[in-house]
Length: 469
Ligand code: C2O
Ligand code: CU
Image 1: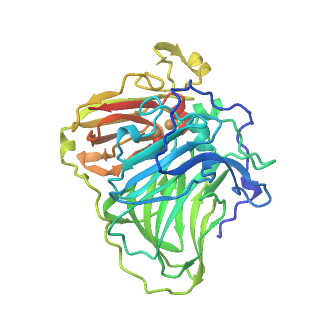
Image 2: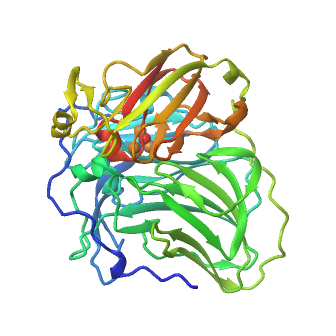
């Protein structure tokens, strides 16, 4: 059955509008503008045709006014040097998600840098040790700033690139638009969203289009770099008219490509690199499967030219990135992260800003979640690790919702049944009630955030950090 195209009836409103915007933390020291000579990356307002053409353009906040922002492409081993210019009415910063970065470039206000005030600049300048698919996004008032469009792809290319005909970034996002005028609903601190599954939208886009179209040739081989930049939406995807392999997860190559099977689950913050061959004679599709079982087209790949070449053999694995060894993980120090709270979660109280508060008082302060009984980031890290120490963290999701845990600055592996290790990742999805363990070598010095990437959850309690020194 052919999936239906999205249209006005897909734009259903889940929650009432409110003009409230995320509350601002006090401003830090103003940045002093320096002439760095770096190319600017300007955070500013723009307008994008997100919704079908019967709607007007949507006002967004985007890098260089675009949503998603420009695809930044650099060679592995190179340096990214860009000057963030803040032309927004709020402070901001940029986090370079998944990069094993120098800590002072990680973009976390109050932890690794001061927020950049309106009119300010900040020079980002760092090495890119790993090839792969990464992304960048605002890390100040993230539910609002990422929700308004401040994100983009960061692609680090291998010197020895795989043999493909084309390399395409597919950045998936999810927006909550007002069906009257196609503009963003500004209820970024909606309490229901924060205490439930997060801010889910009513229209989803690929590269800023609800109906992305990428013309192809039959038998063409494509590398598809999938990125989930949504605030809270978990994308469940299927391929039709093409077949292929998962080559990398969260930027890191798999030792052997895995045949892509349905569904491909892409949680907020995660990436999947695929290599696919177009087998369809007329049209291949990347389908998004909705929760109600309905599928609609996310990206169409119409075949404009028959048989560009003959079908090819399975691709060789991507070249590994440095420091992907697992051996030291066997001696990991055990830790626990008890994930608590939310609606129907049964959490009675948690510590917030040094005081123990009941759920009702936490909710008044916009807090709904906790890690190990503590709601929100404090000046105490989850743990202090010695440089080179291995840690194993048991993540116990004692809530009624899924969460997608992201560690800054380092990748981890899931510890699987029988003590084997899963692929390297920077973001792990935990279903409701699930317990999973991750292990990693704390080999990057600094203060690293560890939080749920459902951004409303992070902003209402699910944020901690790890110090490595
Ligand atoms: Cu992609 Cu702290 O985030
Ligand atoms: Cu969460």
